[in-house]
Length: 98
Length: 218
Image (cartoon, rainbow over all chains, first blue to last red; front, side, top):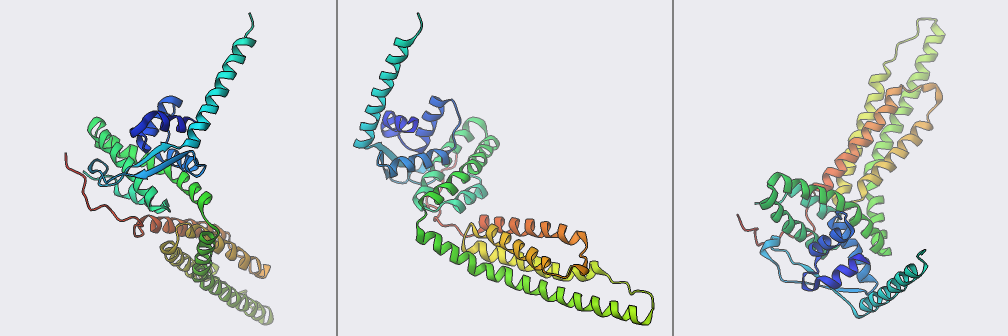
């Protein structure tokens, strides 16, 4: 979910390195590039994100970036997760002892 | 400025999808450049190596998840094919030598018993060394050949070879009483063969072509 959230919030910076930085900050853990790409692969297979390759860049030693974007299905899943999180927050607030 | 080439090859050795390799190495290069300027070359290289090592298990897992039945069958066929090259001559040499040793032992034993002379001394260390050396050479050669065909093959080949070695040794007459070091040496041979397979996997030709555009110099 953290990776999906990162892809949604980063916009045109949603590529491996940017996502890794964002997720590492959010989760306070230094994730490896491989871990991020494996998760992105899972998300892509589930149809939650889509990806495409950019033009080769000099800063990357002439290699392309794999850019990610949340799909319509992914946005729907994020909305549902947000709804569930709100309900949970509400429940916790109501059950808090006085 | 160049990235650690060995670490780069290590990653490429585990990548099955060239596009994924391109993306991962691009990310690592980009971050490595930033870290080289900010923290120095040594620190950046260390980070690159750390990432390469931490990325490998994920790539291996990714292959296991995404491999099709055909992929598995092809690799298995390769493993079994080259396994024959590695294991069969070694096992044949091993069994032949052991049979020869068994016959020699029986003949020498009966000679000593019939003429009542002092038992003949038998240099087991030297004799056992012959099949060991042949087996080791075959295992090493096999793992090299195997590594050039498929990345996961060396370990499987070496494990299979070890199993055959143990089976062949277990089939021998107990009277032969193999020296203890012979069994210990098996571990060394397996470790050596695995290491050689691993080194070959690193040094094997790249799957993804190196981009023609060089990294700009600082």
